[in-house]
Length: 429
Image 1 (cartoon, rainbow, N blue to C red):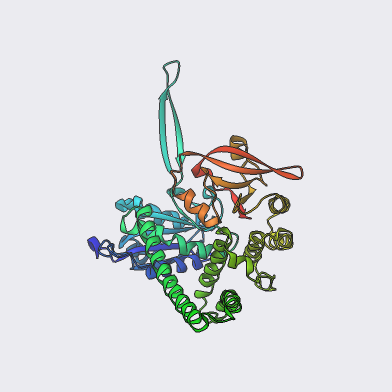
Image 2: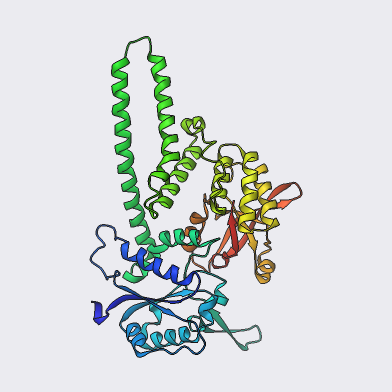
């Protein structure tokens, strides 16, 4: 135990809605995370506990709860609008801060805007002073939002997927290392594992290819065999894409991972201009299913766009828009995006669904605008956008590229915005 702490971190959440689900998921994700080689001997981060509050205005904080808080090195607050309305939550935050550990409080934003979800004690008041042109001292009080892990999404399923990716940020805070450092090490480890798997698969395919080449070398059927081998490769990849998710259906946690890997692999094949991708029969794989949620429909639509079937993708986008209640502005922009862009030019885009009046006035943005690049970088997914945005200094002014609906087409425009203000409600295209 470090310095007498019994828990590495305590998770506080209101026992209502998605909040307790997110709290338990975070606890499991952090406990199951393994540090990259060479970083195992730092601070501990596996010892966790969860406290669920009722959220009632007359809730009493027991000495037992205070004791758990006192023996915790970090405090993670699951934040939603219910959290801000809880007096007991604010009292516990003040109690933990009074122990000299205010810097060890990490908000996990699961729902709502920060101003309506963060408890008041999490905000910091700063007084800024300057001398004006007349030589008079001026002062203003600035309210500063805390840095948080943001897993807000269209639905709980997507939020939990985002949490699995962003758990690295939580672990980095718990062990006291920069997030970028741990993220790079974790990425390298994941890439090594994938490369090892790919190397084994390639070796098997090479050996199989060599065997067939040896068996049929110098025969009249060389051309025929070559065609058959290409067909086998195509059929094998099609079988993997269509059957592997079903084979892992008895492991619920594995299904989203398998689906993500397959979809990402197909996307990379298309972007790379793979001949095999063009030969794959994906019609059955990308058909809408009765059990598809908004996200599944949208992913299938995006893959159809990548295969040059934008017209076939339009009904999927319409169904996804209806299922997620994105609104008419999203649908109009999505259809223009399908009809007037290519994945080679703009791999992905995020449509602004709603924006605060002050931000709209300050930056000139509006619902229906499609963000397609940050500082010239063309992201390929919502996750890439979030990772890039969160890696930037929130106070830094950056450039973004936006496609704005203009009549029957889209007009490319450039805007300047603070990185910390890129928190609009958005949906992927």
